[in-house]
Image (cartoon, rainbow, N blue to C red):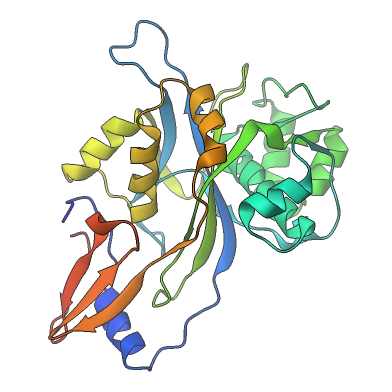
Length: 298
């Protein structure tokens, strides 16, 4: 069992309740997260890009202390009106993301772009379909970012006010994971990959994080294996998948062939144990004694 794997201490009891038919699964909330990549210079000791990660505050109810990517929930207002759009059409995104309507596809992609701006100060949008904004660190940008965080400003209003179009061509859909049915807070999360636009830089502005790092995916996965970094299964899985790529552009190009089948943990009874598995990801299998407690990082 990897030493950096994150398991909430209440999971065993909730798994038992689900198996006994005593727990009603919560409907997952739609969410998006972005693996933001940046190429290192030729002087780097090892090839390959680095990825931007946040360490969630230990006070957070969900995955406190775990390393993750910028991301968060879909704003329902992003389903309501079509926005300025560049890149593949919404019909393509609906098919790629596995959603029923173009408005839902727009909402998920908007969440990815908005959350990256809210939590890292990076904006995948531009005044035209072939340009991207430059420096977003000014006071006026910060005021808009804070208004988005507070939900005082919708993303569509923000883009309209700035005269910007969302650059969906700068994103690639990479994976989809759904929080297990026994979790009280559930998310249906789409993982995207993107390259840091030229002229922009990340900022440590997330109120949900106490630390940010740029780290090579393979190094982050190694430190997870060593128990130095705490992560949830989808985070370390996507890190391992990113590790072979030599540039951010190469990883973005590879997004089109990634499997978007949703990954949902399953729990079953085997004798005196509950067995928790993520289909296709055997390294995360966990055995929980029926009569025992336990949990936490294991």
